[in-house]
Length: 154
Image (cartoon, rainbow, N blue to C red; front, top):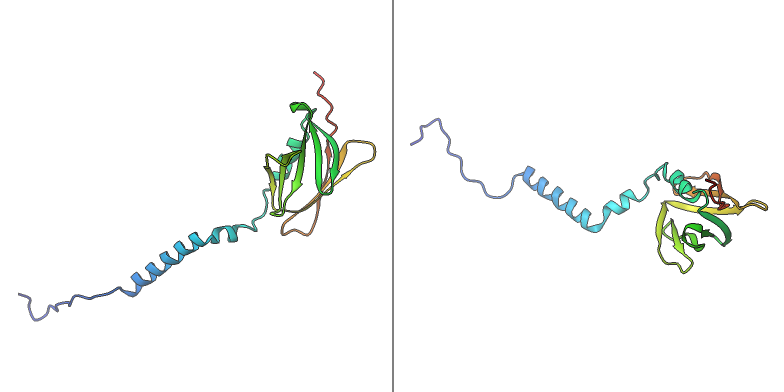
């Protein structure tokens, strides 16, 4: 039996304020994950600064690709490693630069976050001037791409 100084606590029903706030925050996070908030918040991330250089390294493999021409914004190359098979570099509506074959099959992703891209052939060579503009940027990046496709001398 309890003494006069000890108060008996009556059992409480329901949630405390802290428990209610914790449950609401967990519920909001679950709704956010199922609604796809992660895609919307991560969409405007800055592109990887090395991505452009890795892309150029792939294009300028000695003796691999030769410039054939362009159709609008699509660059057409011949791949010497695959019996001069034609490949295309195309910028799609989702701002992704893709690598496809001449029948638009393959869709190998090369660069994301590309707002605009321009290819300009220099006079009488197979060197192409590449101008690329990233999403969220106002300036253009420019470089020369060597697409002569001359085989390596061993």
